[in-house]
Length: 112
View (cartoon, one colour):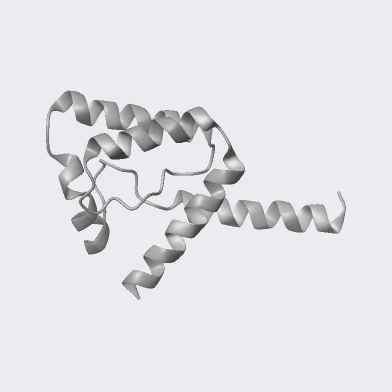
């Protein structure tokens, strides 16, 4: 394997580790900011919670190493789930990485 290929693979692995560390939507989260943002996603009917867990799994199966990352704060669960389905159906891991980098960077800026 050429040096540039090895470096690119290492960079991709590191990126996946960073993006994959984001908390799953609708699961127990750590960190005050994430807990506040996601609080409303944990309310509601059990079937809606189950649907969100199923979508999380479908997303992670479609995009190995990534977690679904989006601004959640006060958005309705239905909007979030619609967006998740659309992005899963789109199936473009390169766009997902770009989305995740953009949102993750903005989140870091907001918390700093």
